[in-house]
Image (cartoon, rainbow, N blue to C red; front, side, top):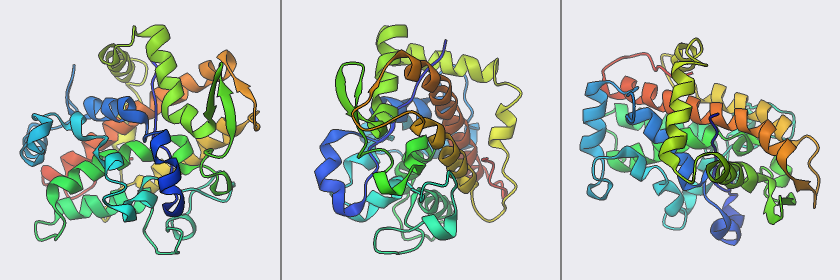
Length: 294
């Protein structure tokens, strides 16, 4: 059985300080798993050329491991307050993502959402004359590809992607966003993986090579020649978020029924995030003009 997932607390710039201590995007474990699936472990979805380029860009403290940097963007929300809206793209509750309608910050500035961030940092890494620091661009990109695959990062704007829906996860206080960012993966690690995230990553990777082997190439494929397919990822998440809200009310208690319904979703989104991150990096660093993500 393979499980996963965790995502960071969705932030609106004005509310960032108030909620920042409460959670992280996908949580550290979730982002680590996305990047670990992308870069190596039991099989690597990165080409040798892309892997070398990524390692060359990583900061020294990462010790050559992309996964060690994949929660970095969460730690920079106070240093770079403009980056807070780049972690999500909420919608008015219609289970859809529209770039023109939804990709903006709370000041109405366009392109300030997770999809815009993925597109922009991909373009920056492809352009050697870009003024953006390539190491930071890589770390932002890896993080945001993880974020866009968390359904509640494309949830309802009126409840901040589930952040204002207070509830109990089994006996503990939580909120709907945190359930998907943190609680599902924590419970899975405890109950099924002996708190060993490498064992959990191995289970997810096994599903990619076996259960989802016929889907994996579709995840990678992107027909766009000018940008990534991050808008499609956001649309997937927005649709999945609708199911995540079903039966959930203020002060409700979520237990086994919800947990076991969420596990397959969480599992596949972690897997898709890792495969697609590798595909984007392969395109950037392997000279392929067509962005291979989907």
